[in-house]
Length: 219
Image 1 (cartoon, helix red, strand yellow):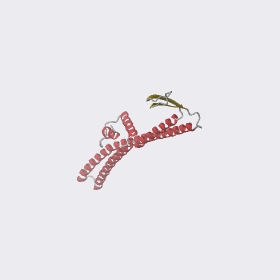
Image 2 (cartoon, helix red, strand yellow; image 1 turned 180 degrees about the vertical axis):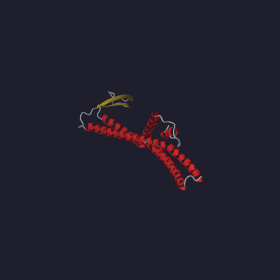
Image 3 (cartoon, one colour; image 1 turned 45 degrees about the vertical axis):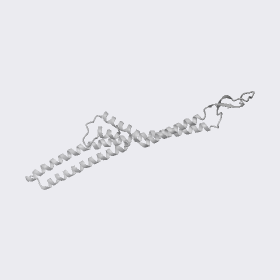
Image 4 (cartoon, one colour; image 1 turned 120 degrees about the vertical axis):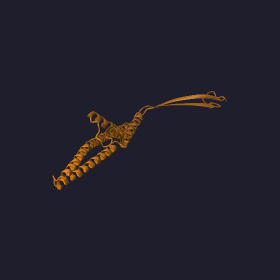
């Protein structure tokens, strides 16, 4: 399952409060999102490929300093065959096999320097990869916590809105009965408007946080 589906199906589907509140479950979801981001983020994939290429280059440089062996084989069919003495005017075939071994006794340290440079470049890129993975982990975890915070604010805003509606209803009844002045009714209606705006802000913050997590997860 992709990180986006983990978010939508298992954790924050819609704007209702999620049922999952166990800390270990939330931590597991965050880890799954981090793992998904490590596999999906293109900059991580590119850096991993670069590290692999540099490692291969270092191995290739190292191989040039090792003894090199070669094997060759041939078949001659001639009339006369110069490999058969004494020569005779007949078609004859002969096999030949050769082995050659070459060793670089001294190259002025060029091979060693090239190997060291290739390894240093690979190690530097490997550290850069580790740092990038740490940054991605932090980014995904932060966005996940932002989403949790935004998600928790929605039911609070909903309860405040319901309370404001009830307050307006009561205030209207009391105003009709002449118990309160119109200013108190106006205050109740203003509170209802403010509660509605707060709920809209909470749901908007939730959607923004979910979009931020999707981007951090590489979707």
